[in-house]
Image (cartoon, rainbow, N blue to C red):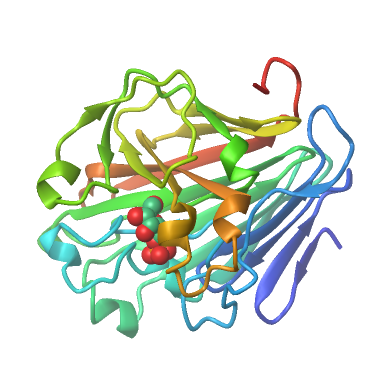
Length: 302
Ligand code: TA6
C-alpha cells in the first residue's frame, strides 16, 4: 500500500524506492528517504534530533515543521496570544484524502480546521490544507490557506514558512544564490541591529558561524550543496528565505537538540515572513516548495 496510516502518522512509499513519513501532529514531515538524481543510494534527507519529542507535547525538532500564522515571536496584533512560529506545528491535523497514487507521485492532503484551542488564541476563521507529494527524487509541500470568514470578520493576515531541517554536514554546506540580497541578522545582540538590513556579499553562504538570517525578496530557487551531495529547493508564493544553524554556542542550549546535532543539518526555510499576506473573506493563498535530491555532480558541489 503506497499510502499507509498508523495511529500517529502517514507513510508514503513510492514505487521507485523513496518514502516519507508525516506526523499528524503538526503535519510535520519527519522523514524523507530518497535516491538522488545522480546516485541510486537511498538516504535520509531530513534531520530529526535524537532528542526530538514525537508524542505531540511540543513541536518536533527536525523534519519540516509548518510555521503559520506567525514567524518567530508574533509581531502582528492578531497573533499576540500565539507562541513563537504560531500554532500549525503544534496542532493535530487530519488526513483528508489521497490525491495521487501512481508512478509519477504519491500524494496526500491533510487538513487543519479551527478548534476551541486555536480560537482561544487566534479567533480568525480559516482553513489550512497541506499537500505532501513524493516522487522518485523529490518531495513537495503545498500549504493552502483560506479565509473562511464573512466580510464582517475581516481580513486574515499571516506569515507562513517551511522550516526545513536539511540533513547535511553543516560546516561544509554552501547555499546559493543569495548574493546581493538584503537580510536581517537575528544573531545580532540588540533589537536595533536585528532590524537593520545587511547586504549579502558572499557568492556562496555558509553556516560555519552561528547563522540566523532572514533574506528578503529572494530568488525562490536555492541550491544547498556539500561535497558529494545536495538538494535544490524551488518555491512559489514564498518571497523570503531563512538560513539557520545555531552552531555549538547556541545549539547546545536547545533542550531537545541531540549532542552535536547542529553539525548535522542546515535549516533553509522558504517563507513569506517579512510583512504579511492578507486574504479577504473567501480568498485563498498557496505557498509551495519542491525539494529535489540533486546529488553531487561537479556543477553542484564546491
Ligand atoms: O527560523 C529560524 C528560527 O526562527 C531561529 O531564530 C531559531 O530559534 C529557530 O527558528 C528554531 O525555533 P524553535 O521555536 O523551533 O526553537
